[in-house]
Image 1 (spheres, rainbow, N blue to C red):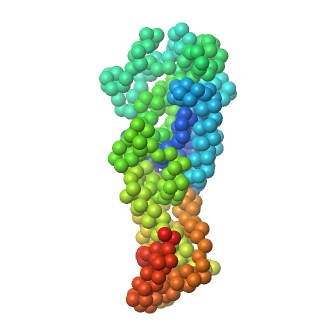
Image 2 (cartoon, rainbow, N blue to C red):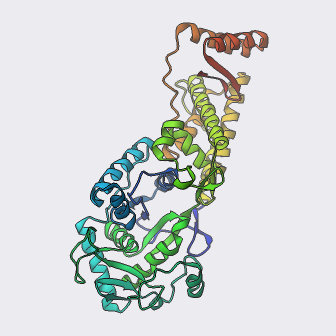
Image 3 (cartoon, rainbow, N blue to C red):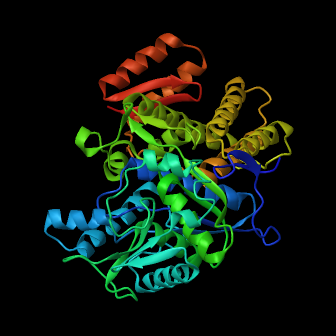
Amino acid sequence: MSLKIYNTLTKQKEEFVPVNPEQKRVNMYTCGVTVYDKSHIGHARSLYTFDMIRRYLVFRGYDVHFVRNITDVDDKIINKARELGQTSEEVAKKNIEGYYADLRSLGVPPADHEPRAADPENIAEMIRFIKGMIEKGTAYEADGDVYFRVRTFKDYGKLSGQSIENMLDAVRIEKDVKKEDPLDFALWKKSKSGEPFWESPWGPGRPGWHIECSCMSLKHLGCETLDIHGGGRDLQFPHHENEIAQAESFTGKPFAKYWIHHGLLTINSQKMAKSLGNFITIEDAVNDFGADVLKLFFLSAHYTSSIDFSEKEIYEAAKQRERMVTFLHRAEETAGGSDSVDSHKIFKYRDALVDAMDDDFNTAKAMAVLFELMSDVNRSIDQGKDLNLGEIAMALNVFKEFMFQIFNLELKEKSVELTDEIAGFLKEREAARGRKDFAESDRLRDVLKEKGYLVQDTKEGQTWKKI
């Protein structure tokens, strides 16, 4: 089966063929964070999703070059700086440090390049782009500001599927008497008092939000057409629509072959917002639940689906993690150092996992396959008779390949030191359960509970945790 991706641009699932298939190189760009505040769990979904997609493309043999920007000059940053009595640079610096700390806590590596909009080299590239569009007549200067002429780009709206008329009705148009058309958007903004600025042919100013992604993606990936451009569904219009218009007007080439958009995240069925008191930072989420639980929550739904963050969903993800940690420990202990064998049954699971991921990165389907694999191995261990240790070793390798290499989970047991007494009780109880002495098993569970350990029985065996 070939890898298929739902392409937002064509509104259909398509076989993935890179721009330069003979090189197997994939140029991939996603929109990063605007560093005016701490990153939240909606950002975590985006960061993790595209890292998972990158990992799977590498697994499928592609040479992935991944760029994700950092917006460090923007109206939101300027407004936050005024609110805090700081400079825009101070606000950006603090939140960039927080962003990288969040990546480390999630266990998500940075992209190959994470260019910053305020970098002088990137500003120079944006000015070059804007000058080129003015020369082509697709942009114009007006008293220090520069705007893009939307109606000169005949395909405007092709990503979001909206007509010019609908856009005028649906979008709040900024009142700006300098614009030739209400739909035109800013490429360069004339500086105001107290704002960061750079010198340009149109006077001191700063870039608009949309232009940075068009320029930095092509500059740092060294191409004229991206293989993949990704981001949240909320960025389709106007941000990604404007990126396309700018880039294709300047280069005369398609900007990106495949557009991937992930669904949005709500909290208890409400949009996340500080005003509602339901804004959860990545830092708080990882501290409270752990990175693995957050990732399993994301994996439980297809990346294009909206997903609701709730106590129930997080509890389910935490239970899944416990089952996986128990399975991993039990299977490793059973398989020991056995040599792998050629097992059609285990390859069946691996093929099913690849098929699921080849179907537009269907992680929910892949997770179901992994749980089937776990149940199959546990049944074999429970039965004990004619146990094929090589088969278990192979199943364990498949499990680790997807869980660690592609889904980037750790699945490490919590570092709780067990006394010899507690370890002995747990071992005795597991033996009692194995010989179906349930009365003794229940007695030992009560003993352990009195000593502060909650013991539960799952399909994967006995689990415990400190209470």
